[in-house]
Length: 464
Image (cartoon, rainbow, N blue to C red; front, side, top):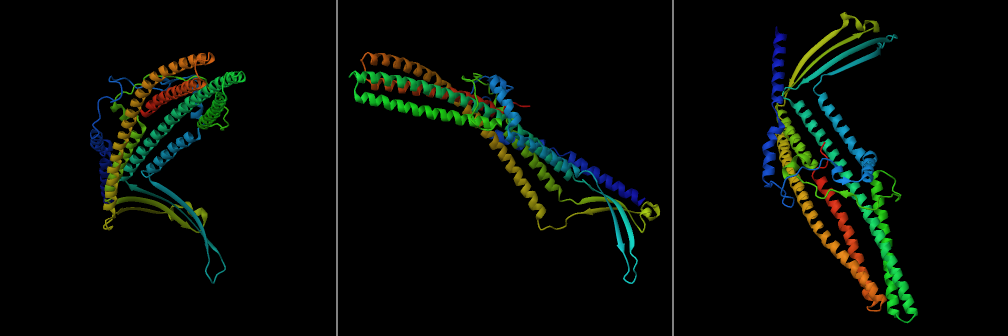
């Protein structure tokens, strides 16, 4: 009767603990604090620097970048990039740690087998003895402490998965950036070659005129100086092309030998990637989601610290045997059974438990503040990128007009110089102006593509 009553009390306590743990909802408890952090930012309904109307965010990188060669390079990077593979292993590690925390819910069972030899000092006979035992113990999760640890590990796993997704999206964006940088470097090198060819032709004409006495020594030296400068620009442009190629190969997981051919033109990029609404960012952007998971884990850790004030209940049972002959180990007459229960708690710890609770609570507040900062950083990045796209597109219009005008001016100046109407210095000045304008225009075109890539990445990339 006593045994039955004991088991009944233990069962009631265990069920009460499970109920207490089951009633714990980190998301519900954390919601007010998270909402307060966002409310403090006074988030608008639509983006300040974006389009006024709402639009759905693109669902894949293919909606942003339309280029088969780039798509192939992205697939290669996703398969071979060592850094991404290392990030994937972090998920396996977090999953294993979750398994470790779940193991605390199951009983521990152990077994031992041993043999000993002994003899009395005045006897010469060595006597053997054999022993075997099986034991089991289980710590009843009365207050849900173990389950809270499991819950925290689950949040850590989800955060790790989100970090991996962020690393994957960042790799895609970096490959795309490196790809357009190689294309720009190639176009800049081509432009430098064309400028050098024109400068060499001008030098040839000046040489002829100088031999005929129609040009001065000053004009000849000036033409030679500009040819040397054009050669220097070409060397620098080729070097930049090589460096950007090496960077792209590194992202692809290839040995960086500088030998990689890409298309001659920039890829087709969506004209105006939709940014959705600011509220969309809270459910899409990886770093904000990771910060939210950290808050939930912190709430679980705080609850676990609070529950540690209560005593632990451990149940144990075992069977053991010690005999002189191995054959007797299975003899029921020699077996001994043990069963027990232990309730242990702390009466005085010098304030250790209280300090742990205070530390966990501080970590909880810290996680909430970090969530607010992550959201603020995300909003800043989106608004900055949207504003940058607007400015770059405006500059592109003016630079195109300027480039066309500079080319026409140069063409007219070359005709006038051949006719002897203007000085060589005017021609070289117009050529340098045209060259610089074309260079700037190429850079702006690349920056516009990069800004659109950055916008989609900042919005969270592909949400799976």
